[in-house]
Amino acid sequence: MNTAWIRALSRIEADATPAVIITVVEERGSTPRNAGAKMVVSQEQQFDTIGGGHLEYKAIKIARQLLAEQQTQPRLERFSLGASLGQCCGGATTLLFEPMHTASVRITLFGAGHVGRALIPILASLPCKIRWIDSREDEFPEYIPEGVEKVVNEFPVDEVDKQPAGSYFIVMTHNHQLDQELSEAILKRNDFSYFGLIGSLTKRNKFIHRLQAKGFSSEQIERMTCPMGIAAVKGKLPAEIAVSVAGEVISHYNADFNAERKTTSTSATATSVVDRLAI
View 1 (tube, rainbow, N blue to C red):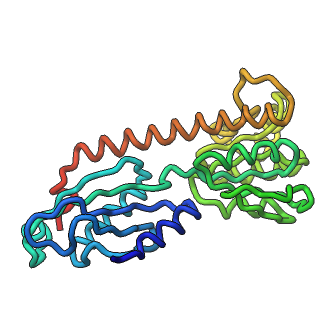
View 2 (cartoon, one colour; view 1 turned 120 degrees about the horizontal axis):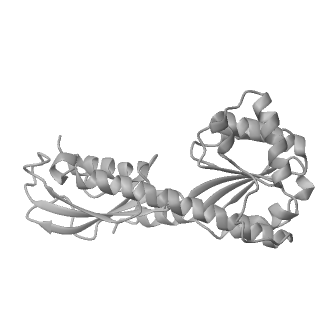
View 3 (cartoon, one colour; view 1 turned 90 degrees about the vertical axis):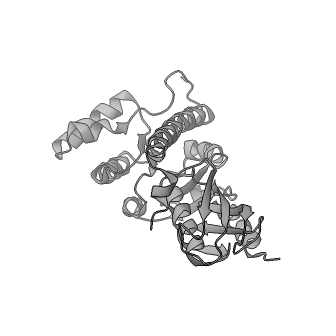
């Protein structure tokens, strides 16, 4: 019995790496592998095999398309090995594709102050991969939750360009000038899914004037959420602010995931299985 996929699954679970489990669920006639055979595919790697050949090539291609589209729902695909894929087996097989961790949100949080320390454990309990950045190492707690990468950088602004497109940015540092510099760097990218800046309406208005003076457009500035958090939560305690901000983050990524599912579902409905597997 091959166990490479089991070992790979353990690593993927630990790292929360987006991947797809491919399982042979039905076999008819002569097929490369029997029902129950599995393999695991990420964007960069593949583990184990469902028999090789053109079947496996097409299966890997479909799996990586699901990852690119951040699909979360399982999918069944039936392959006619002779007619569609030109394999000598001549039978038919049905594969189950099960996406894992495709809903993971990438969050970059600047600031290890009292609110940041209250917010991180909440975010770490969600489907998120987090980079927690501050220039002051002694501000970080001794215990860093799983799924959170601590980054100590004397120049936190340098970290903005290192994050992937579609990231969530949360800025809550100890320094208004640093908040300003981070805001400018994030807004210049303009490829983020969410950008929240801690502060009052007064702080927002001051930042708007400064950003306008530096040539930022109204469209860019409007993408900055400040104040951030659920408006109905009025508390000022770090834990209250953290819950409010986490609630807003959850609301945003739920909306993002639902929009992606609707788009990809519509696209999949318009494309037949035969079209997707065409050579």
